Length: 288
Image (cartoon, rainbow, N blue to C red; front, side):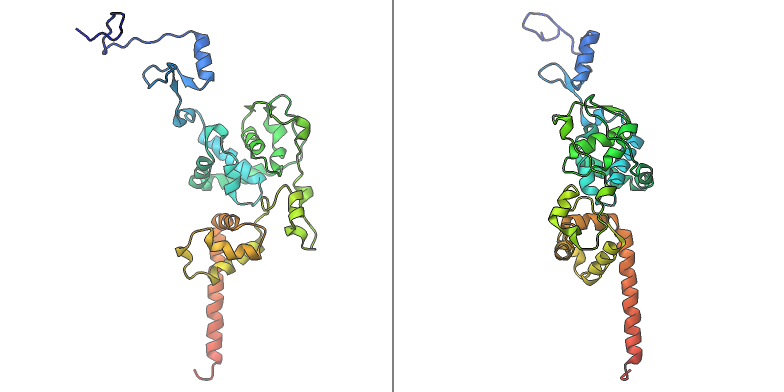
């Protein structure tokens, strides 16, 4: 005879657990609140089982994640991918680090997609309805500003229609900045001016990594190659950021990580050029 499971005197065989029954409205309510009705999994005190992170991502297509990441990187220009991907924290129930890991593991697939999400001119969408569609929101991914929550919502909307809660900020307070109109074409050197950076939506956030930047990075790596692997990524660029203030040391470290192949090839060219110079100097040395 089995041990009684309830104080009321009833008996229940552990080999034959009783399945719970729920009405359709109860199932919908539980699913909406992020729970599953599967009685075979560990339950909370409320008699429900909470979805795990892997459960929440089971129905997410990997190619959809690729397109979201590509859209964000495309509309952030050539800026380092780290801050852009961290800005997606919470999107599709993924952390910023999970988005970063996804990009690093599928960079060969994501990079070709970036060209498909270049900014195009369109009217900024209204947030009054709480809905974003791809046609209305692609251009608005190019906004520059400190708010990462709007960027995160629009990144999802650029791939698939997503129903979002209303923003706590009034719609009239949301400002969209045209990225082309904010590009500095002057040569007076005020590109690094803090006030000028603020007009672009915040300092050191959307500066593209130019060819000149990569050449300067290569020269820095070449002259500091000794002991390069003995220090952390940020520490490698501590002195460099003082001369090139467009980014912090962390920003330059991220830029180097993204353009590593190009920068390293330039370092190799500098080494070859140095060898040629030494060879010429040796040939001109009368003591040789």
